[in-house]
Amino acid sequence: MTVSEICNREVRTIQRDGSVLEAARMMRQYHVGALIVIDKVNDRVIPVGVITDRDLVVEVLATGLDKEAITVDDVMTQELFAVKENTAIHDAINFMRRKTIRRLPIINDNGELVGILTTDDIMEILSEEVLDLAKLIRYEHKKEIRHRP
Image (cartoon, rainbow, N blue to C red):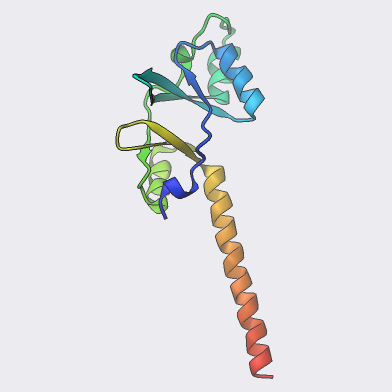
């Protein structure tokens, strides 16, 4: 299974010149903890960074900076980690662990943003898989009882 099969394709984005106040309002409106920072280049959406709710608290609120004057570019995570949409889920999980990140932008071969994979998404898929295994064990047990009373 590849990340393209489970990633969320409704990615909330903001351009780097947006204000941190706008970013905070978007996070609240869409109930997300991060926005992918993008550049638009000839109708292409290229991810360039990530801004999280923690960035807003630690870099802006805690330091008393002017939330209307500070831009997303001023506080976003500059080093962007992303994987291509054909990356295996297992490889993406290992990558996220190595880089200690919880949100992973998914890009196509042209570097354009196509989705986002989060630890929440992964946990949901894994819990469904574990539940399926538990159901299989229960089914096999009942089958054994029926066929070998």
